[in-house]
Image 1: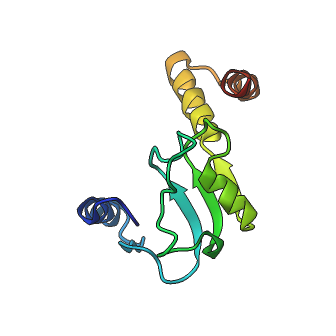
Image 2: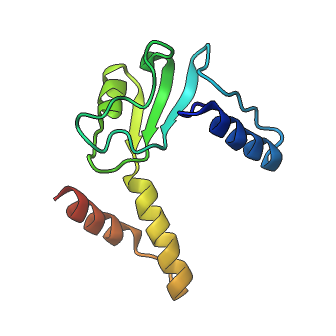
Image 3: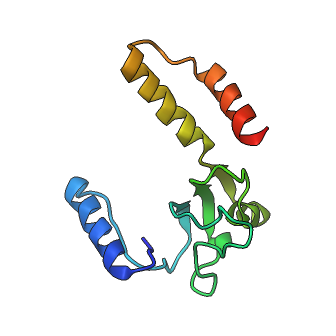
Length: 127
């Protein structure tokens, strides 16, 4: 787990360990390949944003999959570089969709029309 401040990363790591003791959490850049790189920062919303990782400390090609919670733009610089490195990639549109679907189900007591919602969301977000 990496954060701009080590203290925050350590605090989140402790929360994760307290809730899920079987999950191993390491703070700092990994020294070996990883299954998933998750960007949960706002870096990537602007075209001139830097990457949310230090490429001198960790290479994108050492990741199997990259998930960027940002959904606009649809393909951030992180996702572009990950795709070029051969990683599987996904953006945050699906997360937004299923959060909305769950909220609708809670409010209405009815099953959410996920496909209709997906089409409307893609049209609204991407044009």
